[in-house]
Length: 595
Image 1 (cartoon, rainbow, N blue to C red):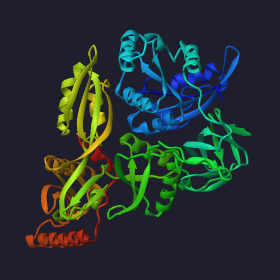
Image 2 (spheres, helix red, strand yellow):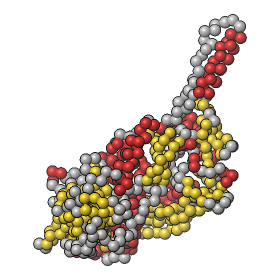
Image 3 (cartoon, rainbow, N blue to C red):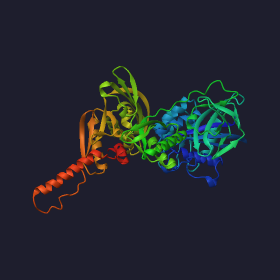
Image 4 (cartoon, helix red, strand yellow):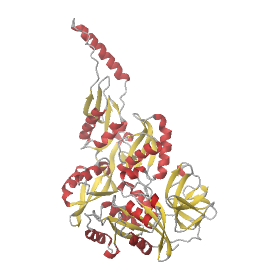
């Protein structure tokens, strides 16, 4: 066990984690040269296309140093703020981590956020400066930033280039010499932490675990502590580039178990695996439940696909434990699910994966956050959907979630960024220079204001330089009202939203204008209205398509023309009574991009 090292790679998005993992696998000859490709651990097409890591990936490497054989378990992690939950799961299974910082960009918001997560778990941190071969690299300045951040010696920092392979041997030596071996007793009762799971259509659910104490053998009868379910270990093994079966796995190691589990609800990330005959005293503690930040309704385009959508979401939830969903129904869209996501990118990725992996085309409603609604009797209900809001006469006040946002940027963009945050009802709480021309701005902003387009705007006004990280700080009382969109007098619940009283009229007007462009013309006029309670605050009309019924009248009395027009008018009125307006999917998406 003293020759096992468990470590992960953490960094801000696009600082070169996946490329560095490629070089480590290449150097330790874990991957044959013919199988080698860029982002070798990113096995989803979506990850390769976008150049981002969505899921953390575990792989075992063999390494020899001074004639001694070591087993290195590497877990590569995502860098985007939406997938920080994946990072927390990886950190829970490790004793040390490589903190990678880009030599051209320096320390960024997500670097600091992931670092604090690692420090909370008492991980040994090895700082690495990557991309030193780039023309725009300034490693000396970045080294000063890391020394200030970590309080380490400059000699502890390894300079490397993941593209050329420079510095990779020093990283492997540092992993062996500086990261502690896992602590545990192979003879004690089995205690293994589940940190991930994937669904395989042929073999059921494959569970990834890290053994804290004890040993697991093929064929053992095991139990999942939280669910109380019992299984036979049909196959256990370690994670190479593909699954590699073993007869047994003992304390300190990372591996997988296949036991033919078919029901997704039986596997919970953070659960403990133990033996049925000699169970451990208590489950492993300290694993946090995921808290969704953004909620949106997901509905099948064809109502008959509701059950297919349910099973698709359950299978997706195994590969993505941060996704939560509960059934709901909408007047406009029928039966669907209210899903909880960690952010807008996460929502986009889930929608894309449903389409690619399960062939499910879905309609997604306007995303919103959860609010605490207090009634006049002193009771509190949590509302995830504006349609579920109680009658306004019964509401005492509404509280909305506030986040503490940290933005690291160049001083040149400070003015526009502060203007953007203030326009989103933000309050500047702290402003300090980190080094040279770079500073950190801290804001308190309502989460509902940043849900839709904040990140895109921040990137465009800072020319891509600003980095953004946040965490929920508290719930605060706000003057919020429900804005309804009516089509021909009928509310479309999927387009209703909770918004601040100051923004309501402007938002209503912009939504009506946008919908007027997107809703196709019918045989009768369509009135699009924005309403706050019973008060209409904006209106647009989609004009009807009309046939020229008077074209055949080429003379004679005007009453002939009037008779034809009256007949047409009566027909239009009848149509309007029985006609329903179909809202196209682009209309729901367009509301997200109102600017």
